[in-house]
Image: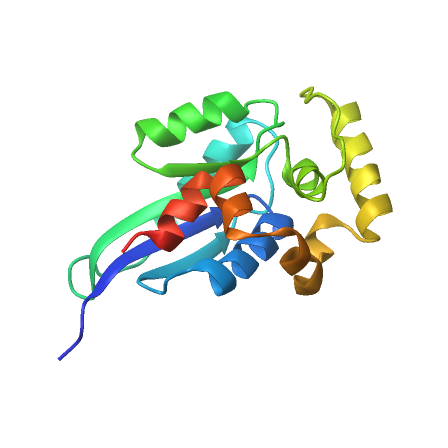
Length: 174
């Protein structure tokens, strides 16, 4: 007899930094009532690139709905400073997916949580380069290389609830 799990949630991460952050948060904050399967999307810059990766990912999913899991959902985690972030969000929500944006981007989010001032989000390449440089200067590594010890220092349940509410709701829902 197979015990049915409450819910399977496919997590689609823009890149390695989002995957690293999600893995950390799941380990420390999930109530373990949901099952997560994470898939990397290999990065994207705009709606056209996103849709190409989205179509490929959706075709590649193989699961047995109703046999093992009662409910299945999907959540996409990506930066809010992409050229088409708003249009990607609309596309995903129109297709019934959950979305967790890292605002302004994952580097800026982690810098803000650490108490560093981040200048206004401008959706241009100069902003992304400056934030990445500021991040590397502060954390002494790139975002996908941040160690668990550092994430434990800056994340609390209150920070998670405020800065990443979609992930917080998935981890705490039962």
